[in-house]
Image 1 (cartoon, rainbow, N blue to C red):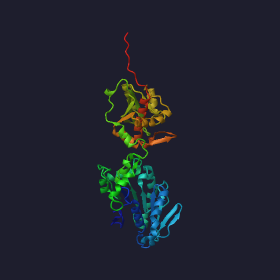
Image 2: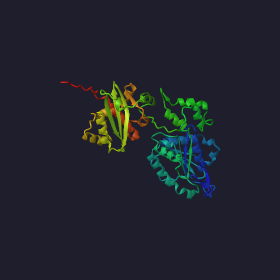
Image 3: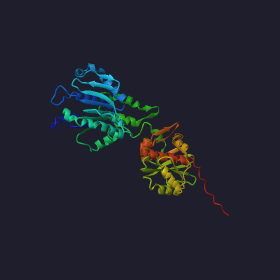
Image 4: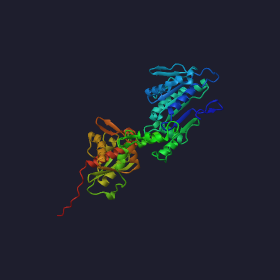
Length: 445
């Protein structure tokens, strides 16, 4: 179907082909077969010469070279080998020439890929590894090289994008899939999408087997339990990674998440913190953070009682303009100070809160760098709980660490979720380091 011929032009109908499919499908072999087929297309009106240029792009140049050489390792035993010349294996210049003048070559997915080269088929493998900026830069380099090729060779150039679903960092591929799945795509695009249904259980191996196109061809149903075991690390099971690999379901968690799925689930509680549940002896503190682009302010509340701290996401609000008034209102109402990093994106907000009379927790840079691990230790030692909340749950799945020596903080470039998690960490640190209020004593004279 991707090679459908337009009867009006006599060449390919589709200029871009997007393939989203599970692992263990044979993407590489399928892609190389299509690339070879493209190299063998004759120039319109000339059955002997083609002079086509086909590119295979992988995340790194080394990966592209390795896959390229592995595929052609046994090429001499293939009947089609009579149509190719001697492979060039020079460092940085690996190339398979064809007797009709076509060339097939690997390359890294780098910013200057495609600049100055011609392209009739560009295969972007494992597109999940690209950020939106990297994907745009790559296409900006290659798309112009295809513009004149149809006039020159008589065939429409194609861009082939193949990959399994990605994770939260896969901004290029995520946007592309969301566009295609919504149906909002150009008519010259062909989209192929495999995977388990959204409401299916990825741990049900019968479901996985039913929807995997490689079953019975590349592996059998009996092998799935062994495949699943590969996603176990010690006592932890990477459910998101398994669902992504064998269900083609986007993993909104990350491999570097600092709160494991099991620990987050074990420390959850459903009962929310409410004004009527507070005691005079409770230590309360608000944690405030701002997204790296200052488009949202996040506020969490922590309550420490009997040595256990409960954290709850209080609210998020757009921008920072209305945040001072709202945070002062909350602080006054609950007689709770505010923990905020005065050196990060919330620095300006911290200055305004202090100028407005809001009590800020005394917190230096070392305290801030220790606050994340402080929460982790409290979770592990059953000294902290979090109130179940969809936004906070997502933040726990997506937030990652940024190390500085032996200390770490939340990586703020991970998106809004990092600010949500930072506010929870700050609230916990503040409540855990405040002296517990003593009940007021009324003296009678």
